[in-house]
Image (cartoon, rainbow, N blue to C red; front, top):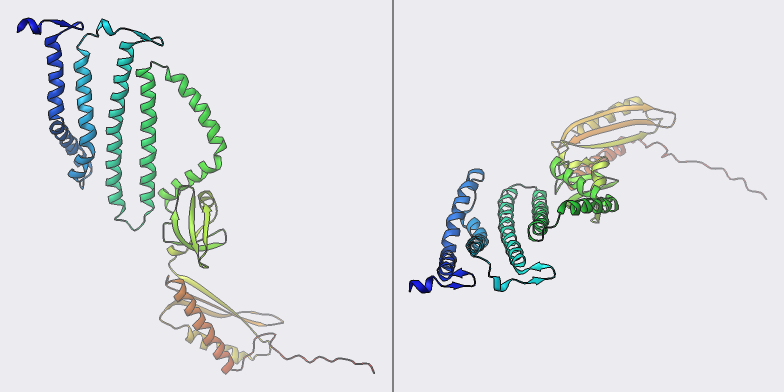
Length: 363
């Protein structure tokens, strides 16, 4: 029996084959148990930074790719202890079969390692989304999705570079130089899109407005319904859907009406110049009484100016930041009451005088 194990098959002892494949088989059978144990160790490290981490979600995400990586890594290390059979030595397109096998193993190892990293990125994104869902602003969720995809793309690009470097032995320095030139040309061609993308980051981090805010920008007033990576969608008071590039949302003057502490209303009355001063004083007093409403927090009424055409009375009053429909209803109520008061006092609006026109007729 010992003679059988000492026999040489394909430049290696039979005993070495049994040891190598036994180790691979052992790790393959226990890979799920081992990978769960390793995942548990990683989970303990993650738990220190994220207290609300769900262990089951973490383990389910990482166990399968981690187990495959573990089996592959052990298999490569075990097979590396064997001598490559001379019978299989051949050259294909200038590459020996040994180099091809080595490159294939390297590629597969990098792919499985990349899959583990991608699963970790997915898990981190899940944790961040859970935290973002607790806030009323949902723009954070869009940012998480973007960065998750961004980092995944970067990991894949780095993996491709590692394959080219370690599997094919290519000098990636010159390749990176070429890619940087191509990237600069693409960035120049897509300058406007990149500016909007950078502006979206400014909006996400600086938060001049969030989803659900009422804003006024570029003569457009409405509710922000969605903040994208290129543009912001606004539902106007006319129920139209306006798309504004993020660059303009950042570069132009933006009025966030939702953040105002009060709403202001103005009313300018141009009174007939023939109105007596006593009536004007009485009108101002009655208007002040009208403005003593519980929904009006501050108010001012005064005779602003006296001109040859009109006596001008200016009203200014402020309310709490109520919804626009309630604010418009209050303005209408105030305006109607002021008009009724003027009718009762028989005070005319400037220019509201009957005119007598003489028309000369020829016989």
